[in-house]
Image (cartoon, rainbow, N blue to C red):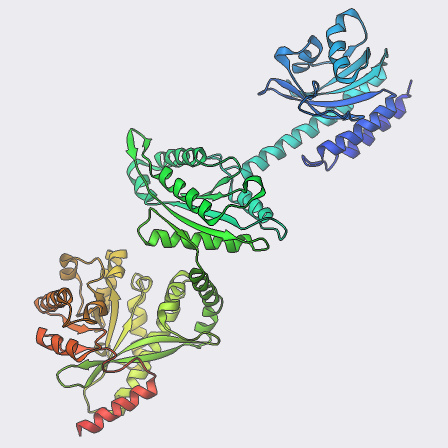
Length: 614
């Protein structure tokens, strides 16, 4: 019999070996430990089992020596307590060491062992693993034939079992955390982390491809949350997840990125990657399934979804593929939703352009690398320049001269609107003051500057404008700030407050691109504005299109009734110019007269105008 001191050393050695074991390394580490115990106690087999009380079974974790059994056919792999022999059934609630030796009382257990191993009779010592009052598993030892166990040995086995019980509890906690990290709590679908890991594996250089990725975004979920509450919104999302799961093949991966955004990653049946046609058909199936009514809180709710589809090639990156599918989804949403859009090469080009802009725009703004062009505003009756509109340009080092339409969205999303707006306003006012000095006796030239919605609802915007006017020694009556109808409806109360403050410092305000936004006659009446600019879309074919003629006539009449100045944008033909004059609009700008140009070129035009007037 092994000495007491040696058993203490064994327990200490086991405690050291169990440190650092994780769920991933549990099986191999358990086998090494069992091998050590088999050799130490001179038995034939050792095993470690865990109890799954939800399943009602004891499950084999590891054994030594390992048997060459197919787990599906192994009668010892999973033993259900309800149908087990008394020895295995006792493992469900075992609280003390169980020793079984060959005897008539153990015949049923001995028969199960004979079926699994061919050994006619064995001795068994089983030590429970306990977590408070719950039996979580068992550590067992088998000796072919008969074997007695000394008290000192049993005590050592209890100590080892206690260490293994602590290990099992730690591993269960780790597995719960892993499950939480990889499964969305609300829907049970894969989380962003799980989706990212799966995509990374699918996009390895030697994996089959391409990999279709589908991003699904619920249209107008906010309205549902506002009407029925967020709990109802959660029930809707959970039901929608079940709906999407029900129409998805088992090899597809479904996940939730968060909020109302879902993801589907198509698998490859039989090792054959899905085709474009397969992906489109599946995306359409998801769209139709999502659009079916869902019962929530006694209400029948229908919500369409916007779907973006992109294809990732092996060797690509997860972030790139996710971004492409998301971009396609946003385009579907911009079309009104309830649509499937596939990421294209043109979208790729736009995406690369946007990425380049985002990387370099901040530096360009802060280094003063931007410049202003000016487009003249013409008096159609005299042909003279009465004002100029300041238009920002970016001389990009590789992409050439970029108009604001290419980068203005990035300006707003990167919080550069205020910084860029101050630069444009300060530069334009300084230039206007210089032009006034060139012809102090002539009619003062006006300056129009576009204002972004973000600037308009900034509380100190009017004081910023006042400070720039003071710094540039410019009278506010020569400055017109152009705002869009969208800017007004974004935050009407703050916009009205800002507009009134601008009026107080003498600055004029005009509504740009009028006729394309959302303002009503009631809003127009209440707004402290001085003018309207007719959108170029109504002016381009003026004189040829009866619909445009009716719209422009109505806008001019509306402006006249409210005492507002009116300017037409986008005049490109003499016919359009004559039609405007006939309708009562005598101020315009467009390529018929001049394209936007640099300050030096415009100064030449002003000088020629002064010379012609003498």
